[in-house]
Image 1 (cartoon, helix red, strand yellow):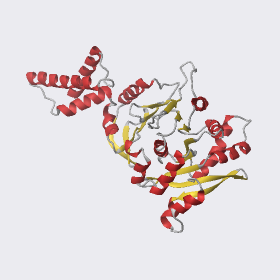
Image 2: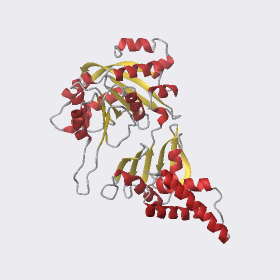
Image 3: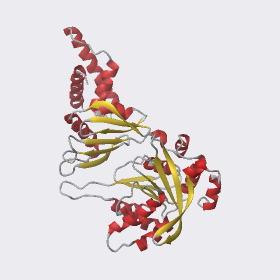
Image 4: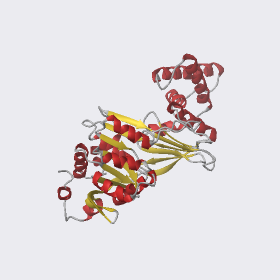
Length: 398
């Protein structure tokens, strides 16, 4: 930010405090104050023979970003093509477009990064400090914020902002950009609307949360959905939807709300579908038990394949205690899960549905037996069977 813009920004902040204007609540009033201060600066500069602000519109935009947005990162947040923004411990800023990372050339000072984090966390009620060096939070636009501070991070703080682009929030939109064939989108839509339990798997940045959100959007008009997340990420809208979020412990170490607690509370809310945003710990047991009561479910899990996702879901419940064993979990999971949809991201950054498997209900030597519903590789390279035939043989959409 240039020196004149910095001066105007401080004056705007002072007026906002004096007049009791919250830029996030009344952006029009904040814009009027910013325009007024920019013009007042130019009037004084003209009278004193000093340099004027050349681009009034750009200056107003920068000032508003500084007082109500996230400063120098706001243009990246506003860019509809950017899906993730991150700042490394050295202050360098990187972004990802279409799954491909690139360095921006922008470098932020330590004080600037800390100021931005404080501003982003302020409305969330969450904190980050030496005793709590990591934090996850949701920004007002639904983006997910993750922060790790020094001395956990070498250098300064590391910040990640993952955006969830509105252009990919439906199955039709994902189909249009090549994530899956039309027939597969129809299969998944029918499965969700018919009350099937669907797990979405994949590696980091493979598009799991985006696909899960699109799946939920396909049935949100006809089902009461209760979502459970550590931090709000699923941008799902529905006439009958409840979104629950976990909570960190207080400074005294009390008040923590875990995903396990939220799953149990969600079952008391009469859900037509229970959704766990990301299953990665002992809450897997509560999810499996919930699915076996007849409540359809959905969620995501990190895995390298659909079958590995099922394998992982038979292991995670063991973290809940010594009285849980795999001999109980595997049959329960095989009977409860209808489809596992695996997402993958290739070297070019493109994300697509790579495979779909359906558990048969059988367990052989502790492993859940599955049948393949869809395989992107075989569908691409062979013509032995159409997707429709595979769907009919599976019996999933019947």
